[in-house]
Length: 401
Image 1 (cartoon, rainbow, N blue to C red):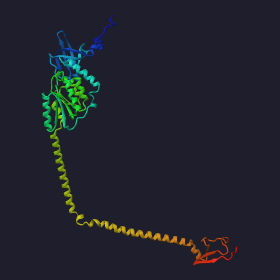
Image 2 (image 1 turned 120 degrees about the vertical axis):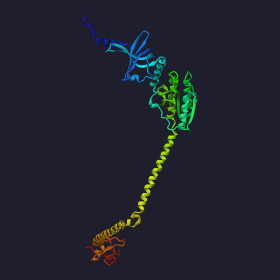
Image 3 (image 1 turned 90 degrees about the vertical axis):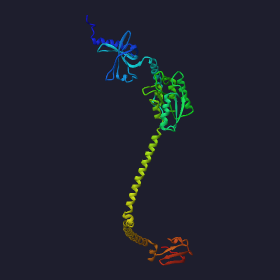
């Protein structure tokens, strides 16, 4: 009888799973009037959506509430985007809100998100494709309305920072059906003719409808395709458009765009003056140091008695010369002794010494030493060398032993 009895917690879990399994509740848009809105110190927001036929509890946690571009008020009609689930402890279902949009902008915001995801997937917003801005451009292209406050702010700030900057204005409409085409054409024209080193594209603040030209695909693609670096300057600090994501740099306002792009000439001048001042100070310090060194050297004994610088060297020269002479004499004596020994040995081996002892050497007419009687014939002229000269004779006969 009681086999299918559930606890309260089990029932709440079961209902929660049933709701979360319903795909329509996973990402749902609900239109209603805000009531009982309260933002806690934690940053979480709790409120109720209601219409003539019912109410729906809703919660928006801190991480989502930080993206709110307006402060919700009781009585505001909004479109809440999120998921339906069950808060098990109280057994109530509620809308877990990710996005809160004031009534009237819902369709635009949906289009904004869809195009953003599409272009992001194509890589148009990647940081890797963004170009660096020139450090000190001489020519800046401005693409905006010629009659708005934005162009006045751009010109005023640019001239204040650098009176010699060249500003080229390409006038376009910045809202309405024709605006995206004009903006895209202006960017393409500036690139084709290479008229500027950097472009500022933007307008003053306004509603999402007024800024919509900068969320159009044609505008965004033209900015992304620009070979000239582009700075977006659309609206006020809290306004974001897809042009901001595609641009190489986003400025919160047109005035800030001018500050980012145009180098502050006065700051450069002051920097150069400061460098000049530091250079002069450094040179004066070096001159003062050099003068002090010169004065010290002028009174030094080395300049007063320069010969004293040579005293040690002269003494070292004398010692070295004496030692060299001594070493030379020793080497010479040693070489003479060795030469005498070698001369005695050579003399002992000399044929002249042998001849001096009574021996002789006989040679034929060709100067060849005669070693045998078979080498001569009767009548040959021979020369006999003795110790003190030569004896020339003619062979009469030979006798063997």
